[in-house]
Amino acid sequence: MVAQNRKARHDYAIKETLEAGIVLKGPEVKSLRHGRATLTEAWAGERDGELWLFNLYIPEYQGGILSRFEPRAPRKLLVHRKQLRSLIGAVTREGATLVPLQIHFNDRGRAKVLLGLAEGRRKVDKRAVIKERDWQRDKARIMRARG
Image (cartoon, rainbow, N blue to C red; front, top):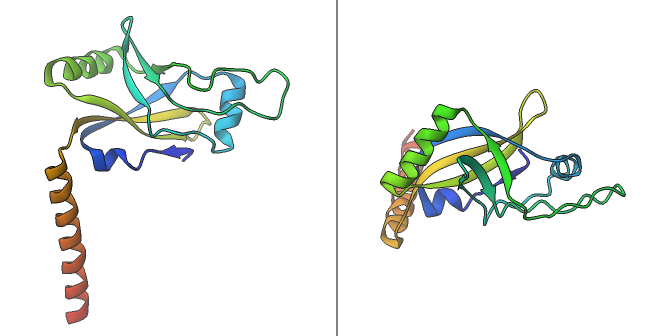
């Protein structure tokens, strides 16, 4: 795993996840392999009938001369046409959000983005989730103590 958006699971209720390819240039891949990417402010959306990842921060690669690229440039995501239609439909109809959850390299060495189709949580919902998680943890401790 290269980068993870840990705050996304706290701020959003993830309904569905989808793995998408990402179009990168050579120096961007090298910078990603060093584990230097930030997903916290990134989001995915539709532009000109294609899926794009906006505001992903990949710092410039320091190893070469020809490593100049825009760190926060929009990057194209690769998904099947059916998946694209369903995602765009969910975003427009239901008001859902496409949130990048993590970036990783697959077995073949290709950079992939795990997208989550999410709904925003209100503050009350966040508190309820934390309360439920704490109760499950305490319940497991009690059960372990009893044997």
